[in-house]
Length: 150
Image (cartoon, rainbow, N blue to C red):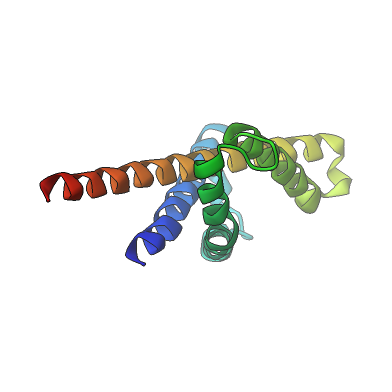
């Protein structure tokens, strides 16, 4: 049970923190840090906690069962983990762009939002899946040591 809680919480938090770090870096480079001074800056107080909770639910309900299936079969829906993750990031990023697009800003805004969504989802899922892989290796090593010591 403890390992399942760790597999839900740790990859999710590391993925969200990686995306936040990327957004902070982008803000510092592109906006010279002025992006955090806007009056509608509810991002850190509202969006991040809600997103983290949703990500943990997705981790528990979808990601961990798919992860077990991928580990055993190496393919899900005929795709490898890289193909499935790439397709998921592409679709999620495009959906992100459509949801947050303000038509009055034009098609370039849609393209930039979609691109930033694809990059953010790619960073999140890469960190998440690498963390899951490292956790699995650690668990295998731990069980191997227990077996060898007995």
